[in-house]
Image 1 (cartoon, rainbow, N blue to C red):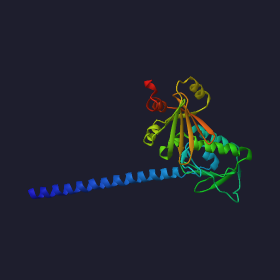
Image 2 (image 1 turned 90 degrees about the vertical axis):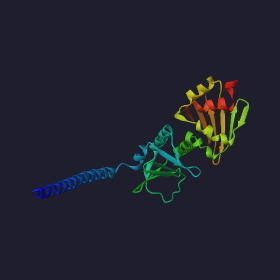
Image 3 (image 1 turned 120 degrees about the horizontal axis):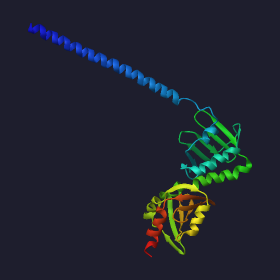
Image 4 (image 1 turned 180 degrees about the vertical axis):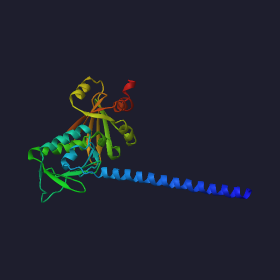
Length: 263
């Protein structure tokens, strides 16, 4: 009798183990099928094509990076990006030109690319391309917008590893900044947004202290004017942009470079 009970218990244990693994594998297969179905649906959603023109797609991009023959991958500030979008309003679609060599190039963060020789704009991705003619009357303005977006970009100017010399002037006093202080100065440069000229110019008139930073770099020259503690003006290539900034730049020059807080 005892032996028969042990055999019965063993059979029950084996049956329980088999049932457990059967349920486990069944549940695993069901969950795998659900996961695969969700993945397939996600892939199908991702593969939905944008049938709008490439120009309209480009106009909707929030992040654009520009390059020319000298510098590369400069992100366009939001307000300057609006100027770039506005310049696209007068262009008209044309056939593929017989000859084309780009001067400026750009791309969005999701792979849409464009380039221009200032006569024509080429917009393209891996599947297609479109060409647009720039009106002669808009050519110079378009060039200025591209140069302004690159060379008066706050984030571009503060790339201190390209700097070769820095001079900072307060009234009649000019100081040459030591190389080992370049990163200290760059780290204080933090913009909030591009602004119009009226408020910064008023701020400059009211401010007790204003400074001029002259930067020479490997491939450009720029001048940054502080206009009170909250604004700066960046000049480069005979173009200028005004920025609202954090006060760290003004405070660093005033307190650490010229020691004006101790006077």
